[in-house]
Length: 156
Image 1: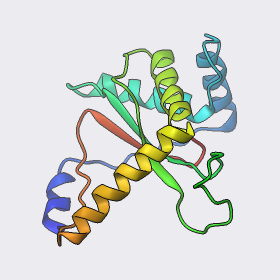
Image 2 (image 1 turned 60 degrees about the horizontal axis):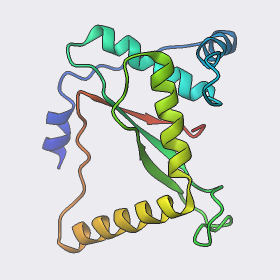
Image 3 (image 1 turned 90 degrees about the vertical axis):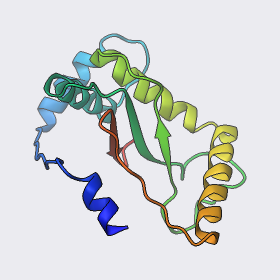
Image 4 (image 1 turned 180 degrees about the vertical axis):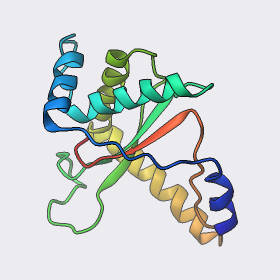
């Protein structure tokens, strides 16, 4: 497993970016001015980063996966007082190339993932796949892809 991880991370660079609250506010105001739907600062920041990375690499990012909390989804199987990570992997459709389109794709995927039936389907499938993998003596390995960006933001 360790060798797979090392191989998958070849060529990966760590980037440290810092944005002020004022800069994030301007970014949000600029992208949100399209008025298509209510966007969060995180949606806009993700879209901005995707467009910057797309300018720097040969293969554009075509999908965003968000690790999002489902703790506040109103569904009979979501308990408010349960400890642990109540997260799911939220995947966008194939992304457009413009910032507004990317931000809207991210927000749309998050809204859809919070539908109780959609969440139940995702949790049932993910639980079954993970349990089957573990019961067969295998382990899970989430290999990254050059055209997918993974976002781990509790603000989604």
